Image 1 (cartoon, rainbow, N blue to C red):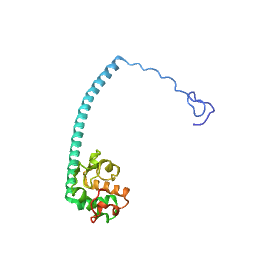
Image 2: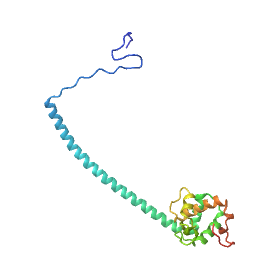
Image 3: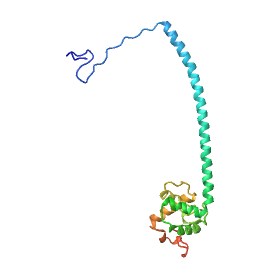
Image 4: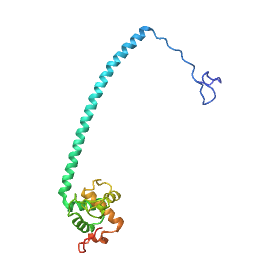
Length: 196
């Protein structure tokens, strides 16, 4: 379209548009209103069908969610059994793997676990100084909740009784307090036991 020099009635300055002219109101005949009522009635039936389909979909979704949760619970239980079957040697090796500490830590961690809990990942100490202070020691390495939370290893369970998670928190605590396991008396089998 060629420019004629005249502006169109709905255009004003460059880049600005005037509002469009008002539209006329449409008149609707009574017969048309009856047709709309029939359409709305049909839509009501469609809405009922929609609601029924939505209810069926919700029920199906809830069933899928329940089945998925059941499978997750079975996997957690299988992982727990596998972890228990690994025993102290497997727990400590898993701990070394997730924390990335060198292999020479193995013997010291073995000694600490034997002295602290007798290799019982569910050990609970309700009588020592920590328990008197309100935070009993728990798990394979007898960590307290504040220590476990402060030194939790990413990628391990948040369960203080999980032996790998408890060991990893103990390793991170040892690194922060002592630097290396060689400086921990409780890890030295040739020295008398002493809390760490």
